[in-house]
Length: 477
Figure 1 (cartoon, rainbow, N blue to C red):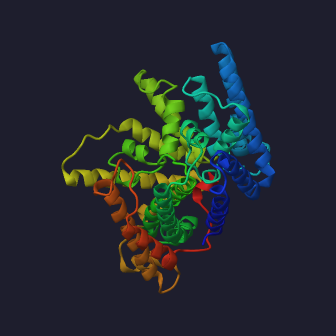
Figure 2: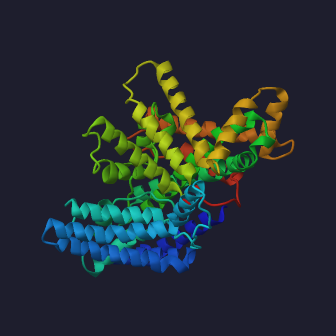
């Protein structure tokens, strides 16, 4: 099994062995110790930075609440948020902006080497920074009270560095998480059963689908001109499924681990590829990020309660920030810009009783999202444009091109079997998620695996899981 998944689940098993033997009031301290140890084992050099940021965030939140005037509260808000953003900028974005500025200066004939920092990217910095910012904003807006005392400090550190969520989220809100922690998590057989089922679903998505498609996608995207245009089209579609299964798979595992620890988390994905428009897609994809951007950037900027021009600015700001949040590269910014323009041009879909109409809207949305993923995946804008050009100009459905487009799966005569196996598992996922959206298994927006699906996915992981490959894609963002 992929080493980081195995290590994380083994670590969880060790934590559980101690966790429920500890009295209820002391369990938050077990979670804190486990989270610190997990971060220490993953990145010992930067634990001090992450923990130090969280401690300053805790202190600033306390003093913000104690401030007697709105001006002083705002000053403490800035004192909390500015250092957090500055740390994020230095470690994640400094080199990107320095290179961009020096490239711009080069246009005007000014030469020189851009300054660069050789800094390791702290584990989960994008996630825990957004957690801390939302905590401060909620205190400033009066939506919650600040954590206080030693117990509050420990709980807040656990919230920021919670080990199931530190790698790839979701971006949990403080109120729901901390209220559960203060209440003292208890063992709930039903919740733990749901957690196990979610973990199995996540492993199925990651090990059986995402890892299986990853080799093909990497091969074609690394040298698209070496393959037929059909292979580029297939790789683009496969990447859509790879990144979804990779990211939503980790979210399922993270939520499941939390449920085994007695902590419920908000849903991060809701079958996004069944969306009938781009607005609906963003209400289903990476829900914790999209809702965060809406609550803490879009609405404070005025939302849609402003002029049309200002509303356009607000939408574009949100999506450009979303793109930049994913990575320090212009390809991510362009990807965010594509989604921003698409959102501005689209209108919310009205209920359509016509099945053909619903299917058409879903297909068009998926095709548009897939086109955007090409920019997200490519190394540069030029590489993305060359990829799309080759996919269009070199596209053919000849027997030879079909054969050569399947070959990258294994490079030998087993490629057809591998391709059909991958398509079969994608179809199984389609049936499962279709049942969640339209079937009787949907209950209050939460769907849990039936015994049949649990058994089928478990067997698939054991027999068909692709082992020994890289970790989660979104751990890099």
